[in-house]
Length: 285
Image (tube, rainbow, N blue to C red; front, side, top):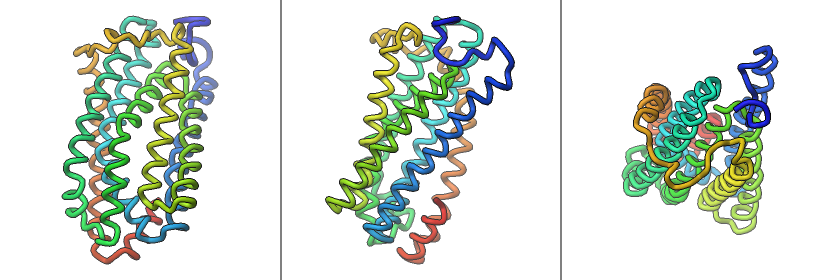
């Protein structure tokens, strides 16, 4: 994986600091863009739907976020392992790690989606979701939950690319998602007045289009990427899976504690009504 076959930056050659700066800037911009991605939803829903819509999106989004933290953390574990293997030039191990990460996240996405879809209403009731926002929160959660495989797919691709030293492409992909999400918000909320449902559809649409772009990007660079996307290549390597879990599970637990604390706080705020819950939701953004 040297010379022309190197997909991203090669941290084994040259001064480290300039390489780190070149790597970190797109990574930071992607995080900022991801925050703006969520803020845009809040602005549009607040302007055209109001407090009920904000609470519906917040409750659905925070509930979803708690479960997707697990997938994000495992993607981070895969990214770390791939970075180590890339530095060691172990191409075969990189390929088996990629296949393991993709398959594991797909299985996890389907499992989480099944749990959330079947338990959505009880969870929202436990969180004291205001009655006025309950239906919107339920539909938002169901629709975005159906998009979890798309979200995890994007996370897996981004983790692999970043692990190989390419932080620019994930920035491009999240930029594409943000643009189509904004277009979807305008179409489904402003024009068709679909409220929280429209926001959910726009979010899933952005994720889906971004995932398609990312997969096409990888297939066109298959020679440098090194993964052939054949069915047998998606076999789970238990040795690699154990390493990914060892790295990712502590991050998952950290994320679960943070998300759990946020939901615990929202449960008490919701008891005061829609206006108070909406105010807290806006401040939390």
